[in-house]
Image (cartoon, rainbow, N blue to C red; front, side, top):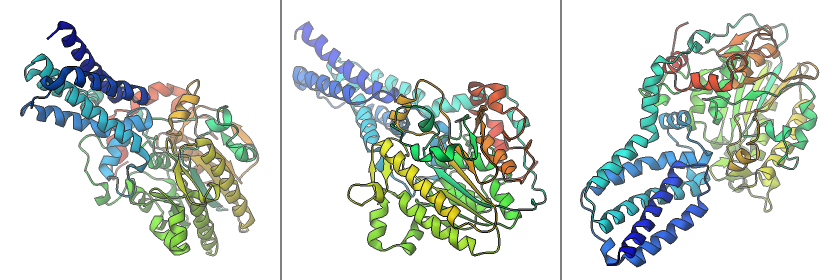
Length: 519
């Protein structure tokens, strides 16, 4: 056999291994070109190598295959969001993923499985071709286990026990005092992935122009940054209603928070104020509220009634239900329709009302088009963020107009918030040149006011309390402070990078946040 042939086949197999590792380790790298090159290199190696490549590797293949398989879930998550957020991964491991599936991550799942398989295949063929010993498999398996994100996270968590941070001491519990003289009706609208950056910076052809008139109408916050522990939907909701990021309970967490008596039992959240003040409350969402612990959170903090996916059967025919089902979630059109009805039902009661609504449309790489914005009148997953944003903006404005037209003789407070920054790769690319911020518009109580301070989602909560008149302007709650006051936010005081460094990992802070009781 010629030396040139030996080198050629070995080079092709090394290229297969290298390209597989690039897909695994570089989540921001588009996988199309590496995938094509990988297949060409593999085909060239198989043609040139012939039958010499095919020998059963023996039992030592098992540890390598298992180590590669253990990487797959993290590769899917990393490629889906262009980075690996271990907080989000651990959180959803704890709660499970019932109520959702991988329909929005089909490409990422294929890429992860193929990359892991090609990595193992490349190593097997290289060992056979060069006549190497079992050490190649053992060494590769060890390296993969060391590089596994859960291993790295464990090391970081152990090191973090000595972190220089005062965040535990800065954690404050809001005090529920006497109610204000006038209790407003409250509607919170969470627009999934509809960050403020879409309004402030070019790149999406005015997709949120319909929201622009609301932007200058009431209280507007322009510098609400995303911090660790607020990067997914429930985490953003918790931060904006409790003032704390949704940190994992270390690595010694219980696998099923659904079995707990309460969710963040020590924290006093917005819903606890509402409950103490006698509000009639409800949460409307288009997915299964058991997913990720939504029901646990809302039920634990003043929202005993949730209108979720199973309840939509009661307001529509089966055919309309199927048309409104976009993958695993109901479209925003039917969510807003349900929210209108729930608002009217709550309005019929004597008590002040609080309605929380969560949408889905511009979620991330996969977006969800409502029926009234689709070509065939059926909700569906799609990949054009601008299209979803325009639809979301129109539906949100229509909802605000409905609320105002049907308000009671009582102040009406409407807050429009993004739950987190958009997950899409295109948004990350378009907005790579500057800071991104969450949407925060407060309408109905007071005239126009624009606050440009650097803040984060944990500051939304005390700002809401002060804006609603529940607490004074200089209030603080959780790790946040009211932007209506003068106290510096942690982002202003520490800087965003330092704040994030103190949040993750921080076992002491995680334990303090998740404590069930105590002061």
